[in-house]
Length: 289
Image 1: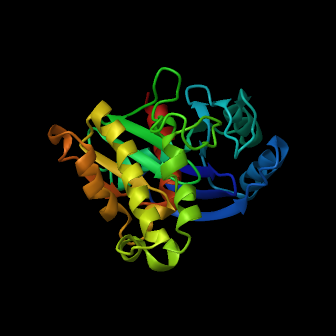
Image 2 (image 1 turned 45 degrees about the horizontal axis):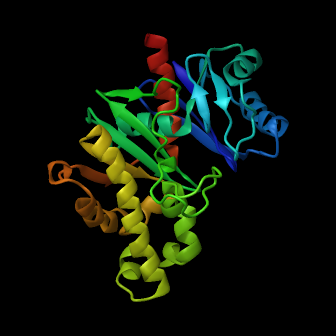
């Protein structure tokens, strides 16, 4: 079986065709045109109309996703499809083949579990650092979605009551302090210099990097203390930079109880293709159930 996978992001739709072994046959990207639902669906339809040789469609999408029915229960602000939109039914009507929809960070976690840094783990957390922070949980070797398809919303755990304004409208959230966007506002030359060099400096950027590492560790510690995973995988472009995970690791050690201090912390392995692999994996698993 060949699966056409779409990772629908706020800026681009990344897409590719995979087989059941995980081999990526082809891939590309197209602007999402996320000004409204019509713009997004026009871009999705454009990808579908130009693809060929697929037997099913797997979609990775931001927001709270009812993966049993393929419905966007609560749309992301960056992807205004509208609450309650039946994305699976829309794609199946266009293509005439089965479709499956899953949350984007859940897809990234499934991809890392299948072929990446979470491979072999029974209990694992995957945390994605981007404009905000998203999370996903693998418990007992399976994706845990929660009772409302909203498990893993670590980015909106309150770390500092009454603190900085978060993108969700609340104050003091983990995302407001440790999202990649929060760090880049304070230490903008990270992509040129990396973490290690800046973290050693007594400068505004150096202090910002050290503060960020502490905040990241506090949020990660919430997941570790609650779910006791054997491994935590950190994703997002910021985690691909030199020294990113290394400066968080000692801060996490200090934030954890001694009984939890041996948790493994590592960077994601599949980069921005993780959600494509995970979307395919979610579809394969759904068809087996």
